[in-house]
Length: 159
Image (cartoon, rainbow, N blue to C red):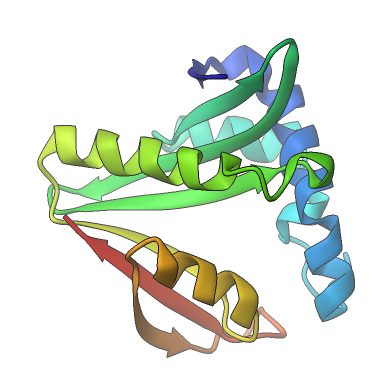
């Protein structure tokens, strides 16, 4: 098992992992290209490259010869890290990989001296919300957005 920083040249691989890992969420909540065109289940390499252009960093999780997950993070200000695009391929879930990826971002945030790590999720995704809370995240505000057919709940981990 290893976690490595993904270079920009891995945009195709990252997009494939993000897309495949989020298809079940899209099905669960009825998300499609017409009602949520920016949902991660539709991720393409251009989105990943745009993330890199914005300063986002990606990390890949390797299990032996297989690359089975990823996570992204960015630091929008001196006090905060955003945890984004946490993705584990369905066949590799429930093995602690997601937690290891989250902890990797938390360690990077600590090393940068930030105060908190924030993540936004579909508010109705109670299973995911409970999972983040078990990792030490606190539930924050929930917001509605005109361009999304669901509310977004923000969770934060105080460092």
